Amino acid sequence: MRRVFVDPEAPQSDAIQEAATWIRRGGVTAIPTDTLYGLAANPFDTNAVARVFQVKGRLPDQALPLIASDLAQVARHIAPLSPTAERLITRFWPGPLTLLLHAPATLASRVTAGTGRVGVRVPADAVARCVCAAVGHPITATSANLSGEPATADPDVVERTLGPALDFLLDAGTATGGAPSTIVDVSDGDAEPVLIRSGAIPWEEIRQWLQQRG
Image (cartoon, rainbow, N blue to C red; front, side):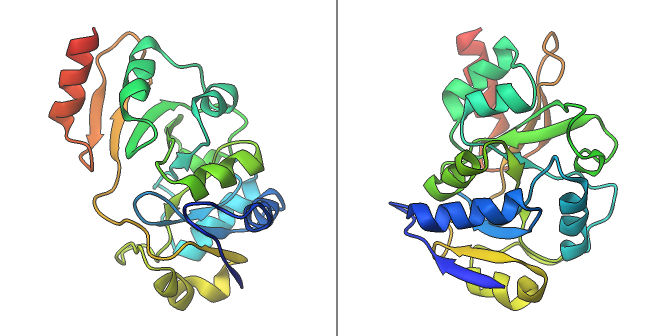
């Protein structure tokens, strides 16, 4: 595994491009996000997705979340956004809010775990967004840990536990940590959003925002 340091405030383009190159070639890369370190791979590449499951020892019935560089990347590569989704994005992206959307047929089937839906967000982390932009489409961002073990914000822990199975580690120092993203299902544009997982953003705050903007 190759490990390269990147400045979290002003990411060096060569480090970002190297991470993106590994991902485009089907590799599995560990990158920082605004919460914890995640495993980044190409979600449109069946073999790359299979490697993520292998690295983590992840069960096949567990879907993989995605991150993107911006709203436009999500709309272009994942799904059109409903007015409700756009209202949530206006307030909570970039940030720890994952929106559950209908998955495009181009995604590797294991990404959705057979649900036909995929979770995606734009993280409040410059490094992660730059990697997505360099790749040219959303990437996976499941936590960089063995399934059943605690997720980590420490790149040293990532290397110690997963290093031999990874191609590349983009080291931006210790990530912010904290609660995982809140997951909200907005896949039915005509229905009320549904809380799937509590997380960093309180559900009541999300509901209040929608009521204010409705």
